[in-house]
Length: 175
Image (spheres, rainbow, N blue to C red):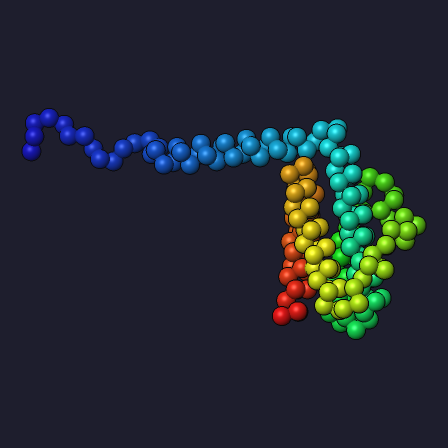
């Protein structure tokens, strides 16, 4: 045994990993609290309400497309009715916190369903166009997530995912 004291391998105090993990957690908490603070500005509620109103209009227009396709091709009702019901629910949810009463107003919506004459005579082509509309709307909603407050961003993401799933289901039926 040596006559001098040997250093112990068991160190006292926190290890490097513990410090790094704690620092990363603290940095994440600061970032998250910074995000939530920016949601409480005076401009955000009106911007969020406008975004909700726009999303409600988009859903109402998509609902009009479903209605037009179903009017032109009633035999597709079994396939399209569940998807249409979801789109109708999305429109209602977005309209709940919208900026103006126009998304829930029927007169503006009844004037805009111009896609009725544009519905293809072929059922498969009509369903493909509906799938394309679902995909495009899901993409726009995904892009809108960047500017949305947290709760609305979650709603937009959920509805965008549902729209992407609708597009998939509509195109899978053709195969």
